[in-house]
Image 1 (tube, rainbow, N blue to C red):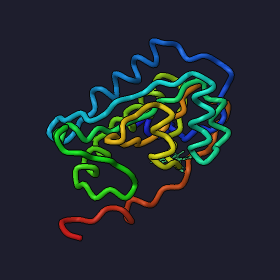
Image 2: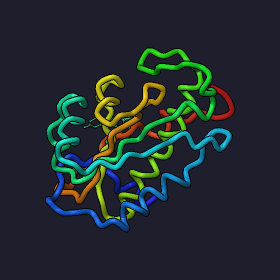
Image 3: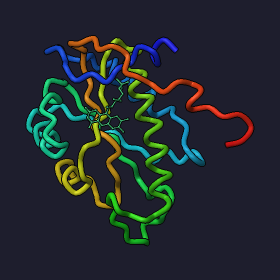
Length: 178
Ligand SMILES: Cc1cc2nc3c(=O)[nH]c(=O)nc-3n(C[C@H](O)[C@H](O)[C@H](O)COP(=O)(O)O)c2cc1C
C-alpha cells in the first residue's frame, strides 16, 4: 500500500542520472507481471537518446515537460503470442482484432508494475499515451503488427504533487450483483 498511496504522475524531473541497477529492478518487476494464459505479450524499449526522446515527445502531443526525464520506457504489446505470423496484421487505434484488447490489457498490468516499482526505488514516473500508433512506431522501428501502450517517463522527481482525487469506495463497489 505504501507505494500505491505515494505514487504520483510526475512531470518535473531533476537533472540526475538513474542508476542502472534500479532500471534492471524496474524491468524485473514488469517481467513478473501476470498475463492471460501467461502469454507475456510485452516488450520494453529503453530510450535515453535526446534526439529520440525529442521525436517521441513530438509524436506524444508535444508534451515538452517529458524532455526533463532522463529515461523513457516504451511499452509495446505483441499480438503474435495469440495470432500466427501467417496472418497479415496491421494494428492501429481502429483495429477490430479481439486479441488486441487482451494484449493491451496484459501490457498495461506490466506497465503498472513499472510505475509501482519505480516508486519503490525512490524514482518517479508518468505513463503517457497521447499519441497515434503511426506516429510513434516508425521512430523506434516498431513493426506494424505491434501496439505501443505507453511511453513512461522515468527519473528523480523535482515536484511533490498532492494525491489526485479518486472516487469514493461506495461509488466503485457493488455487492453480489450490479
Ligand atoms: C493510460 C494512461 C495514459 C496517460 N497519459 C498521460 C499523458 O499523455 N500525459 C500526462 O501528462 N499524463 C498522462 N497520464 C497520467 C494521468 O493523467 C494520471 O495518472 C491521473 O491524472 C491521476 O494522477 P496520478 O497518477 O498522479 O494519481 C496517463 C495515465 C494513464 C494510466
